[in-house]
Amino acid sequence: MKNYNQIASDLDQAAHQATAVDQISTSRSINLEESYGIQSISIGRRYQRGERFTGIKLGFTSKAKMEQMGVHDMIWGRLTDHMYIESGSDIQISGYIHPRAEPEIAFLVSRTIDRKLSLDNVKDYITGVAIAIEVIDSRYKNFKFSLEDVIADNCSSSGYAIGPWHPTDTPIEDIDMSINADGEILSEGRSSAILGNPWESAIAAARLTLDNGEILREGDVILAGAATAAHYIQSGQNISARGEGLGEVHFNVK
Ligand code: OOG
Ligand code: MG
Image (cartoon, rainbow, N blue to C red; front, top):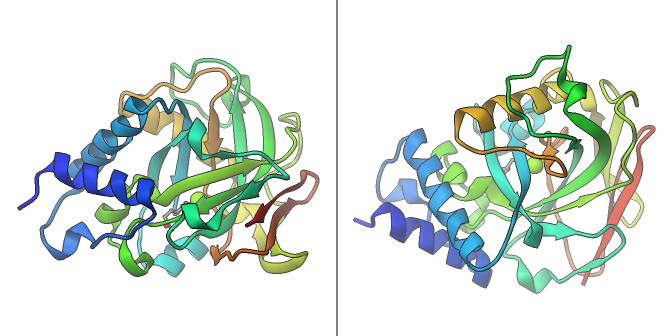
């Protein structure tokens, strides 16, 4: 039976080489604590290659996402500078296994989050909100996994693009959001689908990092989790996300 280091290394290699691997849960059972442990070892390998922590992403914060993937609970993973996609730039499909894109809301951290937050004080720690696209690319064959599998795989994190930052008094509680290919809507939804209010994701991110020994500092990013189902992307497409009052973010798939 593979140990945690071997599993973490397999997942890291799968991402690095854009080749899918078997789910862990088909050959052994792991619990949630073990899967976060594997995620941490696996992301450590990225840091060793020189990648830098840039924030965290939440997953399965909307019913649409939980139903699409058949899971039932919120998850979190790490983002690195290597995953950042500049808006308007090209991404190479060959660097991915079976990438999907989804519309997200991003938060920009203004100072070290050293306490649990609430709706009353969350804006004291956040300086901007933006529309974003997350590119998820499960390292598991057929994009199929259990909750434990996907956590170990750093929650499918693969890329993220962020639109223009807006001040924190910009309404984001219940706005229209869409993910589009070549200007055609693939999915649209309301931001209130994200935990009832996307600010709750920033609050959850503060709690999860504090409870798990990560620190969110000035300049770090929080991705709130997608409001709609994710869509496979293909070379030749221009992928964009739009958020009412937040503008647009896009990239080209080569
Ligand atoms: C897991 C990641 C979920 C979200 O926004 O809900 C996620 C997956 O669907 O592969 O990023
Ligand atoms: Mg996501």
